[in-house]
Amino acid sequence: MDRKTLIYYFDLITVLTKKEIKVRYKNSALGYVWSIANPLMYAIIFYFVFKIVMKFNIKEYSLFLISGLFPWQWISNSITGGANSFIGNASLIKKVIFPRFFLPLAQVLNDAFHFIVSIPVIMVFLLFYHRVPSLNWFIYLPLMLIPTFLIAYGFSLLVASMNIFFRDFQYIIGLIMTLLFYLTPVFYDMSFVPKKYKNLVLINPFTPLITNWRELFMHNNLNFTNYALSILYSIIVLVIGFAVYKKLQVRFAEVI
Amino acid sequence: MSETAIEFNHVQKIYYLYTSIGFKELLLHPIKYRREKRKRALIAINDITFSVKKGEAFGLTGPNGSGKSTILGLIAGVLKPDRGTIKTNGRIAPLLELGAGFHPELTGRENIVLNSIILGMTKKEVEKKMDEIIEFSELGDFVDQPIRTYSSGMLARLGFSVAVHIDPEILLVDEILAVGDENFQKKCIDKMMSFKKNGVTIVFVSHSTDQVHKICDRVARLEKGKLLSIENA
Image (cartoon, rainbow over all chains, first blue to last red; front, side, top):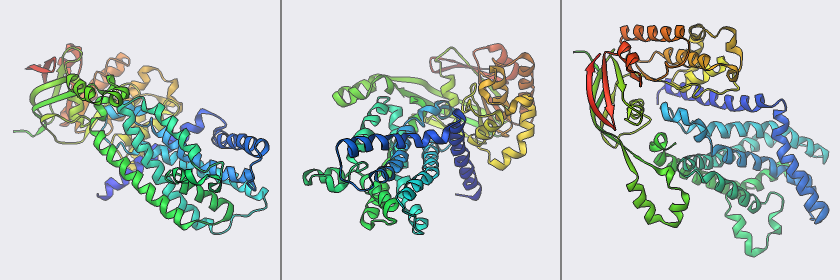
């Protein structure tokens, strides 16, 4: 690939991502508030149900919830939003030849941007519990962004491509994401899961990822095994996503 | 002999009507699904052969469903032929239908950047041409308003000025000139004429034979996916 193409690709991805971000903020005066309102609302609900009503025994439960819900929100939004990233640009796909895999990429980068700007909210919660983010964050945070980004992109590429051929898919993906949410230790801890079901939660590709985000936010640390696992999962998902995209994209323009 | 810009060689394009058979069928009757898929194949164009010379204006006419837009899609490269070969030579710019690829919430200026880059320009190139594009579009101060406030004529102007400023070597026009006021239509046609003079190849699709004959050197007539004739205009 020559320099000119690289510059072009860079410009293309920048302009597409900027568009997504701009549109999100232009549509509503409270763009930023809305992007953090959702995970905060879930945190309040789960806190009420599990801490107050069911009397879960997890220390610092609100921090526990927040530190899992925010990264989950990024992944989940990228996948459900990404599902429409081709269909939503049907007119372009029909007429213009350009690297289409940039469309879901812009969606994922947009959600990544929102996740990053919501990190200060998590910090406020940390301070509330008299915790301070350590210098480790400067290394661990970028390290964690990589597998989260790769897995979100891999999945959204996959669902966006399949969505063109089977329109029912966007409903199925909503169901699957709900299922996966409950199979991911977002509002419970791995230690709560009965032995019999542990594997079910562990083969979930999001489990090591979310567990590690929590480890980072709450304990300024990373679990190496989980990190290696999440890298492995994310690469597998990305490879599958790209393979499906490559196979299907030839007929995008005629089916969409 | 002048150079060839587009060459179609016994091209066939088949559409499989995937969308009409859903996920349900695939899951419940996978064998029936395969059979149905074959049955529902539609030959969009069949055994099409023609070539367009560099700097020529080539018209495609024919009733709905005759395969005009399919040919345009094949030239643009978004569709792949099932049989035959297609050769193109030069940077291709499609003229998008009203507002395609534009985002209603963004301003005209933001949309110019977005659309030009999607069509193949780098950011630097767009910035260099920005004033020219805005001037050609005759949008004036409206260019900094969100385009959801635009009339359809204004959208057409914006789209056309982006497309013509990409310096295309092959311009694909799909009945866009039906919109916009007379003045702008004339301006577009003038621009296309000047393109022609500068050696830009134009492929022009239209129902209206009048318009096609005015602009094009040769006009192809299509019916049901077959090429009936190619006449000099």
